[in-house]
Amino acid sequence: MFLTGFGIMLGHAAAHVSGRLVPLKGASLGVPVPDPAPAAPPGLDDKINTLLAWGKWGVLVCGVAGLFICAGQMAIGRKNRSTFAADGATGIPWVLGGLSLAATAAPIVGVFFR
Image 1 (tube, rainbow, N blue to C red):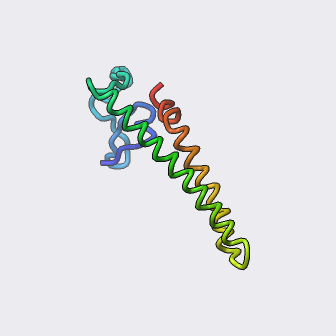
Image 2 (cartoon, one colour):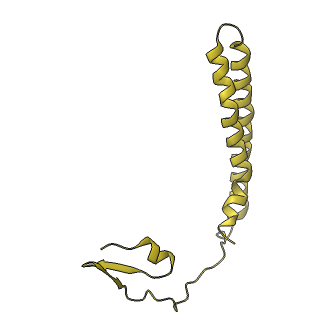
Image 3 (cartoon, rainbow, N blue to C red):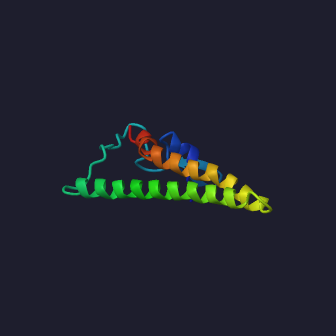
């Protein structure tokens, strides 16, 4: 059985049977699909917020350490080790990209639940 992605995107689920599409039972446009808002289980709000705060702090520490490592590579590689310095310089955008992704993670995920 083959489900067409395009049909599912439009709200039509269909099965591919002998070269033609056949609608599956219960897959009509008139059926409302429940869409509740996300809710945390009772008592877990504070614990999850603490866990997320620790994760943000860990990423911040890793970002600072990553920039220090890149700076150290560039300083050490200044004389006669140009590839080491180049590795440090090319690491900076990766560190900044990781920090940017961590800083925008919550808004990016929030877009999908509006």
